[in-house]
Length: 220
Image 1 (cartoon, rainbow, N blue to C red):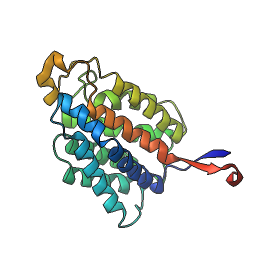
Image 2 (spheres, rainbow, N blue to C red; image 1 turned 90 degrees about the vertical axis):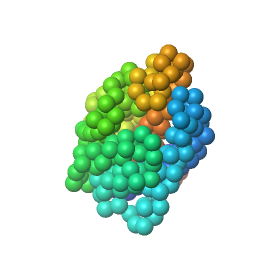
Image 3 (spheres, helix red, strand yellow; image 1 turned 180 degrees about the horizontal axis):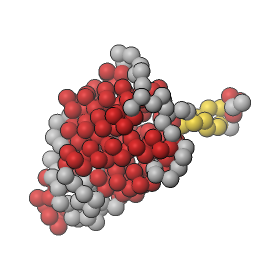
């Protein structure tokens, strides 16, 4: 019989989060390619997989000293390795998140909200998109709102990830108003936005990294 333990949202968690992102995005590579092929240029899955593989290669050089350092490493690597719109957008998100994390040793609920809000604001500033435009903002915005209530960091992450998943699914009936998908106009209706879906995977990875499955005998 197994149990679940929640770990502190510290530097080690941040490293696990980024590694989990790499694992999940590699697993979902083809799905993201197909989603992007329908309304974009088809490279989102490949770009995200390549970018986070590069992040893991950097992490393999040594553990991060802080949450902020891990997020900054991700930002600089993604901006250097990921082409198209995703690299600058996710790079800016992780860089702004790094600044928001500051010198905290670990994140509580309010800090999780601050980090996610900074990431969302960075994406909005870079991409000039608003909620309803059928972009990754449609996943980030509800995630930030959901993270505002819980005082506990892991609960804030869980709320954010669930809201991001719902927000990503809600892009299906929308008409794209930004990026290459906007060229399709009403023909973009009926397709999920690949950036919103990858955002949902990234935020769910943060929850997975915070929760460890352990045996009941290990629970004190």
